[in-house]
Structures are given as structure tokens and as C-alpha cells.
Length: 198
Image (cartoon, rainbow, N blue to C red; front, side, top):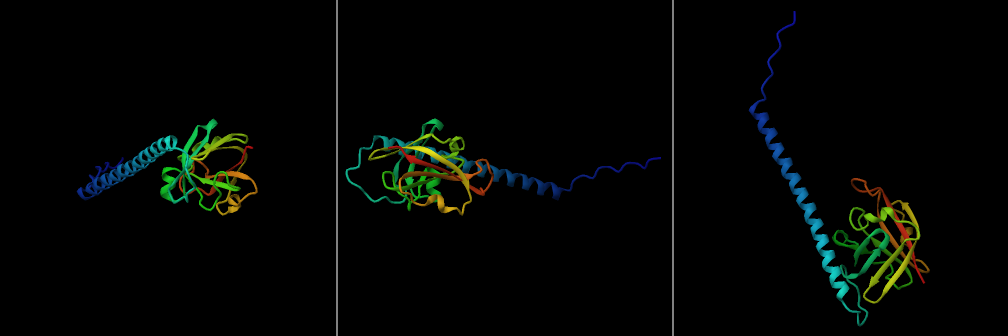
């Protein structure tokens, strides 16, 4: 004969209170995180739209000037991928949140050497996951427009700074984190090298 089943114990009021507090705490944290992500996204889109409009209606620079951190350099495009973004001087976290950053120690468009651009894999450089050798790249500044052709694509370790070394030609290098869909700090770097078309 089976013993009589024990009645289910009711949860104590203290336990119910703790669970309720934990529920509202995590709900609040989730709403806060989504709000921040929404603000960052809206801020970057508004910045891009405003700077793109100002850049496209601005006239040619009358004389050369020294670039400062955050100054707009130009517009980068990869037509086949639909990549179109403003490029600004510097690769600080704040700059990369709003635009593609030009590494200050690298060459500028039109100069001999390697023009190095950095961008986040989950924002402006997300389209690079589909880039191919032979793709056209345009970099338009206030002075003129430069055309490049993609020559190589590789994945390297973050410590491999050789990809940033200067060159004897007019080169352009894109750098972003890899893999593209990795959660957290990515372990590799995705590097695209292009050469100016004569």
C-alpha cells in the first residue's frame, strides 16, 4: 500500500518577495540596456546623416589644414555592398561609435603609403563580410575622389600590426573585428587591402 502523498509546501512569503524583487530588477536592467542600445544606434544614424549632408554641400577646401581628432575627412563607399559612411580622424571608442575612423598615424588619401580605416563589425563595416577581390572602393574627400580596387582579404591575430605598415604605393586598408557574428570581444581581425586605380 502506497503511503499518502505529502501536500505541496507553499512558498514562503520571504521567498516570493525575493523572487519578485529579482524579477523587477532584471526587467529594469533589460529595459535600461535596450534603451542605451537604441540611443547609441539613433545617435550614430543622426550623426551620419548630418555629417553626410554637410560634407556633400561643402565646397572644396581653399587651403590645407591640420586634421584634429573627430574632424570629418570624407566619405567611404563600396558600391556593390551598399557600404556608405563618413570617415573621421581618429579611432577612439567615441569616434568608432559614430563613424569609420582613420588611424592617425597612417597616410591620408592622395599621399604615398597605406590609408588605414577601422570600423565596428556590427555597424558600418558589417557589409565587409561579403567583400570580394576586385570590388571597387571610393574614398571622396573635400579635395577629390579616389578609386581603389580590392586586392586581398585575410584574417589575422590582433597582434599582427604588419597589416598597418606603410607601403610604396597608394593603398587602403580596412580593419574590423572577426568573426562578424561573435559575441563579446572578437579574437581575430578581418583585413581588406585595396590599391588605388591609376
